[in-house]
Picture 1 (cartoon, rainbow, N blue to C red):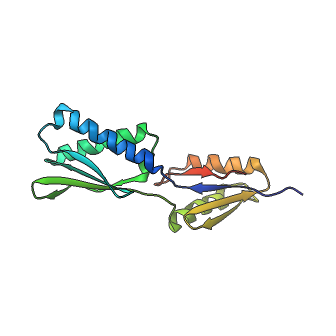
Picture 2 (cartoon, rainbow, N blue to C red):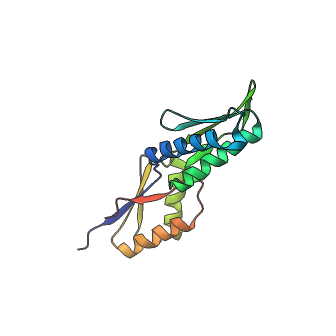
Length: 164
């Protein structure tokens, strides 16, 4: 009798890479000529909150662009970054961006419904906290499910781990 094969669908972010990207963005913002005199800065507050500040709305969105380019270069999916809208706080414009991890219950239900509706027969999806365990007797079916999930354009980052 064949054993069950499985993998986990997760949405995780390497926090060290995020910290490195924030440090690189802060360094670039401090050195670039077009940010001189705008009091532009990027600060990592806690583990998953990034504060961006500048003197004008255009400058703070430019700082956000710098941060996004550094995150992409570091291998962080931009779907994991939830950047708010620029807001005025006195003389300074601010954006608060959060790094999101884990798959919410609603998103996990969307993925499991996709697997049930369009995936091969005999594949089971089980929600386990902030991840989704997909199991089947056939490894080929699991690879089909992985390509099906990759083909969908979800509004959250998706990775596959624990493939056995």
